[in-house]
Length: 375
Image (cartoon, rainbow, N blue to C red; front, side, top):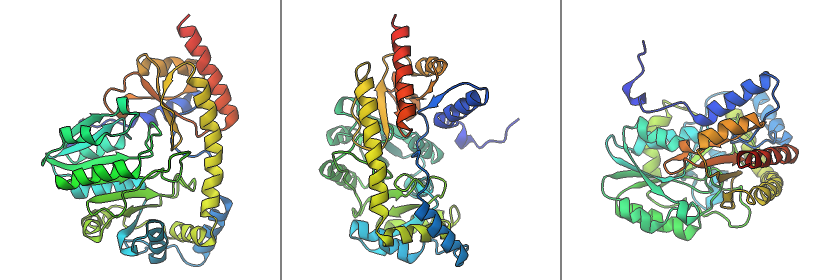
């Protein structure tokens, strides 16, 4: 017997988390598994951040803050975008910001446009809000949403469009020009764009554009990826105050506020001038890993070279679930493509947020599987 609400009937547990649990179970059984599944930097939170947090806790940053967050941190973040602190709300992680914005703007029964492939949570948010999902295929355009394709599906029934560049699971990066076109199309149809820019600091060649400052856009960002702080839960929203007001109605009963000591630690990191150095050090290492994995696996599979984040979406030319299951027997865990939207049955996501030694081991095992399966 279950009393689960009907709104959850079409929602399943994250396949990413399932793969993580399967991998952990295999490791407990003594199997040598290299996991390329989880989406977080393998770096520890920088020591400087931890020390700033410790000082903040000792000095009393252990209580509620404003629902909007510590003003000085909002001020520091607003300078990234040349906007006002009134455009910034701190949230308990980027995920809370995404859920809050979804609940604030997705009408029951409305249409929600999601490019495929996209991060799996967007589909969950739309289903929780009992909306109708409209997917737009991006595979023939290097995983970038084409404004012309958007025009073919958008109408007045659309409440929200989800964007995610740099993209999870593909690493695709979109220019400001194309992002602007999409925001302007959405505005014409009175639709809100939720732009998830959590990977904006992790890019290699083409710098990502941002939609911060558009009156119909809610930008979601945070420090989980850029400062390797996934467990600290510090995200933020950038939008105009008119859109932040309905988001606050959800945030004040959901996240309430992000941890005060973590907010203060990030503020001190930004003020100290070391923020960019920390990010640059990680990105330099991610670039080496991307170049290695792409250089090796592109000899065997079809891959669009990622320009941001730390993922690549690989066309393995066979059922992704079968591929994933078989590859686990060779000692490598990857994520099947199907949670990321339609048309992804033959794709897997590889996260190269792992040490170069582990990546070398994993690549060799993937090659062995490829050769054995085609022998």
